[in-house]
Structure formats: structure tokens, C-alpha cells
Amino acid sequence: MTQKSGRGEPLLKLVILGRPNVGKSTLFNRLAGRKLAIVHNHPGVTRDWREAEGKLADLHFHICDTAGLDGFESPEIKEQITQQTSQLIQKADILLFMTDAREGITSSEVMLAQQARLTEKPLIMIANKCEGREGRQNLYEVYRLGLGDPIPVSAEHGEGLDDLYQALVPYFKEEEEEDPVETPPLPEEMRPLRLAIAGRPNVGKSTLMNALLGESRVLTGDQPGITRDAVIIPWHYEKREIQLVDTAGLRRRSRIEASLEKFSARSTLEEIRYAQIVVLVLDAHDPLNKQDLTIASNVIEEGRGLVIALNKWDSADQKEWHNIVHKLGQSLSQVKGIPIIPISALKKRNLDKLMKAVLQMDQLWHHRISTSQLNQWLEMAIERHPPPLSGGTRVKIKYATQIKTRPPTFALFVSKPVELPDSYTRYLMTSLRDTFNLPGVPLRFLLRKGKNPYDPKK
Image (cartoon, rainbow, N blue to C red; front, side, top):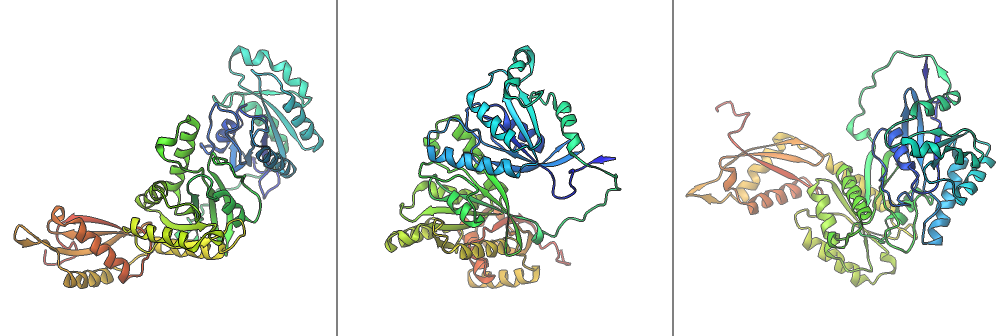
């Protein structure tokens, strides 16, 4: 017999509750089987709740990490978090109430415990940080919450999870074990599109995220730095499965001081690396600055598709955003034709236009050109503008072939690769982009020494 979800489909939803810094994100990462949430000793790191598929032995479920309700300077942020947590509690199948056994019980935990009890949902009490004598000595305090016998665990070290498993098993239905059926991998075009939303702090990234989702899923506000950790949310647009990723704002390195902000910046850069397409959000009221261009260049260097969303354009002076568009064209000349879509995230304007640009960029990112077409183009490009002389002889480009997509990458077989100037490579890239209508997509050329590998005369 094997333990599955307990309700067939969908999987049971387990929601972790507790005040800040008791180890909720550490347990979430452990049950999810990977580090999805930033873990830091600074309280209040988790602000937006996150969800992932989790597993504990043979139990499979959805696991949700929530923000603690203390330690927020902004009443507006605290109110949003309180509302989101209350909604999540109502959607939960099982509540995991976590406390720090070493710190004792606080008044906010007593209030949260009362709220959880009123739901009459299955509730499991977890006392974390019970490694060593100190944590277990304070276990008796946890009984003050009136939530039953606490399960002593150490989420950091993975201790006590067997007891948590035993507490969960009664809620999961046993199903007959079936022979595993191998599922063929999905074609590339049918896999979820991973779409990251990036930009400087306070340009409207989270507002755009909520506008696309049609709900207040992530926290928003006027103060910069509300989003601290990347949040990945499944979504569908025009029957296309998408993983939307809201990221923390990126400031210049010289202005990043706190270690927590360094973790946030690292998380954002990782999400750019894992994304297929990145929407860079700019504020039409702010002059384009070096940090905007640094983020854009990082996306291009990683070979990700880039779409620029010029937010708040409806309230900006036309001259302001025309200047931004002009400067972008000059500064990102290595990738001509990057789509720049004027939007209003707050008023939900031009969002369809933005998403159509995203889907178009994804198609270009996967584009493949036949070898015969490539070499016809290469012959034409060389005839129009021959390679320069080197040591009295002309560098010969003998053959071209596409070796991969995501992004489109091409191998050029050249007689003297090191002597082909960068300026000529840029000419070929521009010519290829224009000939095959590949605006805005990053292209990569790999120069290889040798003859045409398919030439029978070699």
C-alpha cells in the first residue's frame, strides 16, 4: 500500500503558521526538497506566502509557507499579510502550527492559535529548535496554546520528521500501489514558460504581478523593498501554462548593505538565470539609469529573452518615455529590436499586448533555422561585405550550422577564428537577425577552426 494525497486529486494543502523566525521557511524548504525560500536569522524575511509540492516519505501534498504577523513597520503591509494568511487558513486542509521551543510563547502566538482553533481544521502542533537539552526543557510552555501535544523537531537538522509523518498519516488515504508508468517528457513548446518579472525597487513589479493574476496575490505598497524573496506562482494565459516569478528589486551593488538584501539580490539573479523570458519593468517617470541597463545586460548575457514593460506611461510626459526608448535602443544595441511595451499595471492597461510580446519572444527564443538556409544567408552576407584581410590573406568563413536553441546558437567554421574581428561578428549577427526576422532575441555565435564538416572533399 502507498500513501498518497488523501483525496486523490488535488493534493492536500498543508499550511505552516507561526510568528516570525521560528523556522517556518526552513521546514518548508525541507518538505519541498529544495531551497525555495530564503532562510535568515532576521525576523520577517518571508512576506509573500509561497506554495510548492512537498513530500515526506510516501506522503505527497502541497505545502505553504506563510509570513509571521509581527515585526512589520508598515500597518498597510501587516494588514495585507493578515488578510492573506486568513484566506490561506480557510483554504488549508491541515494546519501546521510552529513555535520556537527555546523562546517560549508570545501573545501574538496565543491570538494566532485562537484563530486557528476556530477553523476546526486538523491542526498539528510543532515545537521547532528542539535539538539539544534547552529546547526540550521548555516544551511544557507550548501546552499553553491549547493545541495538543507538540511534536519536537529540528527543521534545520531534519530531526523529528518521523514523528511529524506519524501525525500526518491519519489524514492521508491509502491507495493500492500501482506499477509505475513512464510518462514521456512533454515537447518543449508544451512545457511551462518560466516568466520572471524584474527591475529596480518600487517600479511596480508586484503590482504588475497582481494585475496579471487578477488578484492581490503578492504584497504591494509605496515603500521600496517589500518583496524580499522570489515568489513562483502557476498561471495560464491563452491556454499556455506559465510560471510567473515575482522578484526582489535590484539596487546597485554599492548600495546593498544588509546581508538580507544580498540574499534577496542573489535570489533575483538566480531567477533571471532560470527564466526563459524576463520582463524588465521600468518607471516611465524615472530617467533610465545605469542599474536598469545593468539588469537588462545581465538578462542578455544569460541568454534569456527580454521584454521591457514601461510602467506608468499613461501618466508620464510623452517626451519622458520617448527619451527612455531612445536611450534603450542606444545602450542595448547588441540586441536590436527588444520589444518595449508601454503599460499601466495599476490600471491594467496593455497587459494583453505585453503578454503577446512575451509569447512572441518565447517563439523566437526557440527558433531553429535549417542548415541550408543558414549557408545561403552566409554566402549572401559574405558577398555583400567580405571578411577583412589578415596577414595579407582573407579570413574564410566556410560553413554555418545551428547547434541549439534557447537562445539560438550558431557555430561558424572559420579558417582563422582568432583573427575575425568582433565588428565583423556583430555585422553577421545583425544580418542574421534582419534576414530571419529575429528582433530582440539574444543570439550566440561560436567560432570554430576547421573545414566544413559535411564537405565530402575534405
